[in-house]
Each structure stands twice: as C-alpha cells, then as structure tokens.
Image (cartoon, rainbow, N blue to C red; front, top):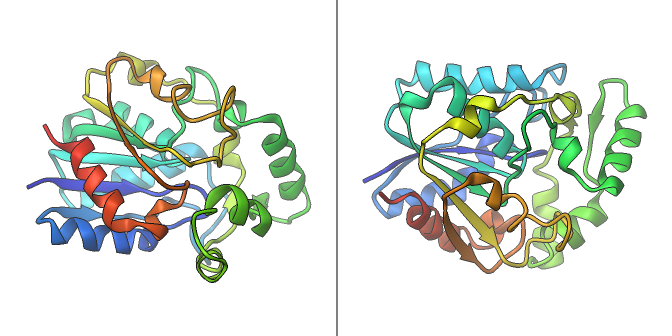
Length: 241
C-alpha cells in the first residue's frame, strides 16, 4: 500500500482533506494532510513561499515520512515543485491535481490570468495583513459549480484568507525541472477555476512536466468536496508504480 502526503491549495488547510483521506484509508492506504504555513484560521499570514515550503519539510521530517507520493492541489503545485528540490530522496512520485507548474523564475501570480492578478492585488491592498479572500461568486461559479448551493455555502465557510506574498514570490525551480522523480497530472475535466483555453490547467500546466502520467475525472476544482470517493480512486491510479 502507498503513503500519500496531500498539499492543499489556496484558502484551504490540511483538515479539509479529511473526506479524501478517509476514502484513501478505506482503500488500505495511509495519507497525511498537513497545513501549509500561513494557512488556516488564526495563522500568522506574514509568510513567504520559502516559509510555506519549510513548514512542509519540517512536517515530513518530524513525522519521519519517506518513500511517499506527494500530491499538490492548485497553489499546492508550487509547493510540491519546491519540495522536489529540497527533499527529493523522500519522494516516490509527484502528483499535480489541477495544480500550478510555474515556468522557471515565475510566481503563481505570473501564471494567473490578468483578471485574477488584478482582483487579488486589489483585495489584498484593502486589508491590513496583505491577504486575499476569494469572493463567494467566484467560488460558486468557477470553483465548485458541480455542488448544490447548500454545499457551496457550507464549504465556503471552511475557507480562510490567503496570504498574497507566497503567490507573488518568484520561484527559480531549476532543480525541479532537472528532477527525474516520476510525475502525474490529475485533471478534473470541468475545472474552470482557470478559464479553459489559453489559461487552462491542461495541457498548459501538465505539458511542462515532460514525461508524465495523465489521469482524468469529471468534476470541478473542488471535487475533493463534491466527490471525494472518486478523487481518492484517481489519486491511487495516479500514484501507483
């Protein structure tokens, strides 16, 4: 059986993986869902991308995790790309689930469509801690459009403001692009959190991985909430040797 380490995306924290972890454990696997520094309610939002990466390195080392499959969702793709540089000897395979794979030297913001860059920058400027809260209409229509209104509302209340700085930090990623760790890309076919076409997830992001395994499933950007059982099955498929 496989050990999975699941890295959440923006506005999320580790406990939100619970439905998926439950399904993975039912299939006989072990899974962990750490919270990235600066994320979750009550967290210190004054963090850099390096702080985010270090928090997961510390988690892995303190739990003595090795030979695991590392998955990153959305923003979490930027974190696992850096973890592949910092702790490659511990990672069996990387899985990017509708995740950012930045070009060398780019930040996540560089990879986001202009309307998101403008929205996030203006929202952060209006706060006293340089954070962004995703507006509910964007969540409802672009992130979790496969849910009913009650589910969309309930899950939105689980989110928390996102620190802007880790999204704006430039990432070198030279070592990541030289890495020979096997890679997979999970693509939810109705995911429009990035608008399809020029700015879409697949093949724009996935093609940057070089040789990779593609696994697809129906669903939105938040299929972790709307169909955790199917997502868990696809994670196993993406993570198998």
